[in-house]
Amino acid sequence: METTETIFTRHSIRSFSADPIPPEILDEILQAGRLAPSAQNRQPWRFIVIQGADKVKSLSVNCGLIGLSNFFIRSAPVVIIACADTKRAMTINKQDYYLVDTAIAFQQMMLQAWNHGIGSCWLAAFSEKKIRTWLDLPKSWRIVGLSPFGYPSEKKSFHAKLVSSFAKSADRLPMTEIVQYY
Image (cartoon, rainbow, N blue to C red; front, side, top):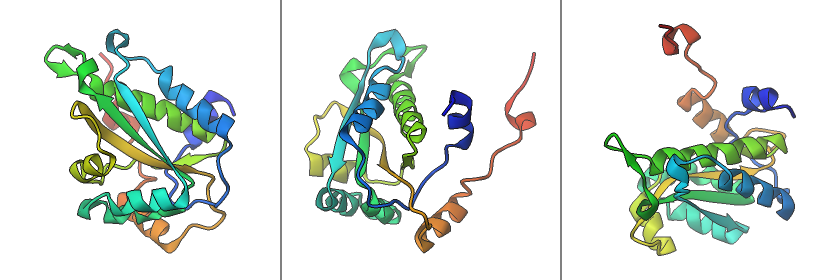
């Protein structure tokens, strides 16, 4: 897939097939995150890879009350939790860049995954405190987002259709609302 096609066709996937992600492709996805740019090359990202039905299910029940809408992640063969180590943060103009840096890295991973036909869905609905406790994360780590990764199912589940509709995933603002030329 060409870069433009990858960017223009990527969308959130909420129904996954049972097909596993080959280890070499999972490694490529993680490498895409590792190679992302960051403020002064601080590379604050840390990625936790959850694999196996039992571990993914355990994560899904440890997302907290706000994360109940994420139960669809149980069908994914892999869930990656994107964290940022605040000890590696760079602050410029009173802005901490660890969140930006980690978001860029995670997006690169999602694009690399889509390049292989592997879907993802950026999730922000979770209890950081609950997942932090479940994983026993270092105090300096913040959870920026998490995403299931897997091959899209041929058929979308009812829940996937409902959440996609609620999230208005396909809606995009027109260029005239987001771009200004000076």
